[in-house]
Length: 252
Image 1 (cartoon, rainbow, N blue to C red):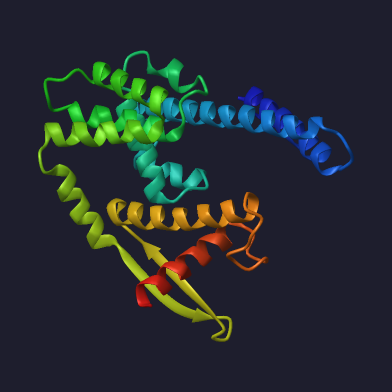
Image 2: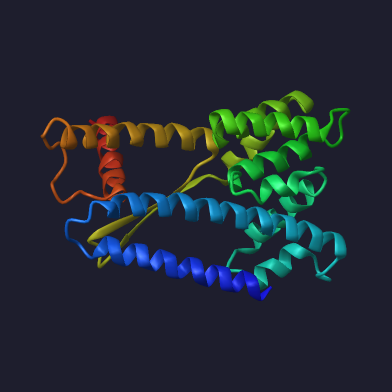
């Protein structure tokens, strides 16, 4: 596999060259295009590598390369948590059942979320009379036409169809895992908020924050005004400001 290392090293050099050119300054108008093109190319390469990893892990699981299971082994050789490693092995095992899926996974056009949707499709129908390959093709078509989120939504509908009540049962488990923690840090001058929400409440909360952030950006970029302090620049800072605004609306 020395060839893979060589290719990755070559890609790293190319990315560094793009970054050096972008950071050099001057009037080089091509810098923007170069960065944009590099993001697309590296992103697709990353997606292809993820697909290759899934394919290899699926084959490794079939061959029994790890005595304690591929999942725990991956956690020891890759920089991932054990939960993420087990999920990767689980998806690879499901995707290995799809005929002809390797070429698509390795094409660079299928990202991790779409691959996850395909794996969940196989899992949803494996105990039914439905053909996993046919249903996976339908899921893939949805992801290509409307994006990975739409593909995952299609899987949720399918899961509910084949096992009525399964979605609510899963949401109940996820609500049980949800929490919000508040603590002070930095000698009591800062407050740390850690929130883990189930998909339903998480989507509502994120949508509310996104609306606030969009208003901040629109006012700053298009109206020439400011509704937040000038030093609030990054997305994370705007998220914090939006969360505080929402709390003020609720309490006030």
